[in-house]
Amino acid sequence: MVKRLAIIGVGLIGGSFGLAVNERNLAKEVVGLDNDQRNIELALSSGAIHSKASSLAEAVKDAELVVLATPVLASEEILSQLASLLDENTIVTDVGSTKEIITSLATKILPSGVNFVGGHPMAGSEVTGMRGAHSYLFENAYYLLTPTPETDTTALQKVRNLVEIMGARVVEMTPEEHDQNVAVVSHLPHLLASALVNTLTDMPEYKKIIPLAAGGFRDTTRIAAGCSEMWRDIFRSNSVRIKEVIKSFRTVLDEYEQLIEEDHSAKLQQKLEEARKTRLSIPNRSKGYLPQLYEVLLTVPDQPGIIAHFSNILGQNGVNITDLEILRVREGQGGTIRLAFATEEEQKKAVKVLLREGYQAHVK
Image 1 (cartoon, rainbow, N blue to C red):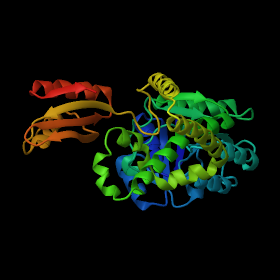
Image 2 (cartoon, rainbow, N blue to C red):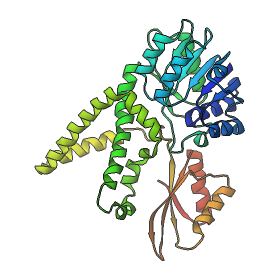
Image 3 (cartoon, helix red, strand yellow):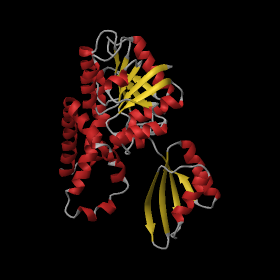
Image 4 (cartoon, rainbow, N blue to C red):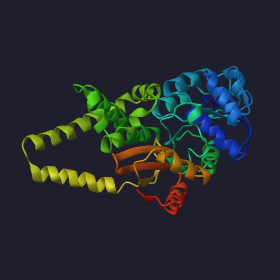
């Protein structure tokens, strides 16, 4: 058990960290620091932290573990301020999306006896701040730890044990491997999602097109709804790696354009098939930056109050709807609604309850 845990930044990730720790009684005392008073108040009322600090020095005083849960560039700045405030044997970890710069900085400025363990939980939500936090955010999510040859093994094991008890799946890699890998599987996809949305809005009379932007477009661009401030800092902090993968992607996109322009249908189909097979090999139940949602397709009649009716039924049976989307509706004939749930257990229970009530429902 951690005697005193300091969380710097009680937003989505920091708040979820505190909730997960306190729900499992992993720390005797959790203190939080945040510039946003709304985050602090919600963190206190929800039990994510036991007390608030008014300064960085107050927050980290006598702390056994310090968690930096601010945007990437802010964490690097705060780390510089921490160097003279930490006691010997204090462990510092972060939750940022880039690792090379902050790890190098920690090696240079932290005093002997203060141990840094780079961390990156691959989990998140479109809902930013403490109001999006919940205690199970890290469950079954990959949590990347990035030790170096200089990392204290005892400190590394303590952080590893803590996040594993919180339900995360720990993967270790070097800071360099981390930044290269996430540039491909996380940073570039977000950049492309954002660019795709902006491509839509650049179209003439794009507002007329938006109603058609469901299905593939909505799924592909979902991550563009993430916090713009956070992603701005990520792109700045990992600019070298991101520029490398942008060049690689541009080469691939140019190849597709050439195949279409020259009508090489066989080669085009080959490329599409290669991508299809690779995509099908990717596990669909692991969590990335956005939590995995467990979906149910529900066919409903076209009548007033139908959404309220099935929502109330599910609520009365203890099933919480995480997301709802109306997919297809025909006047007088009804339509299909996509329901999403946070857990597979809720998904199965929802289907059972809805079928019992006479609805047509099945797992997507």
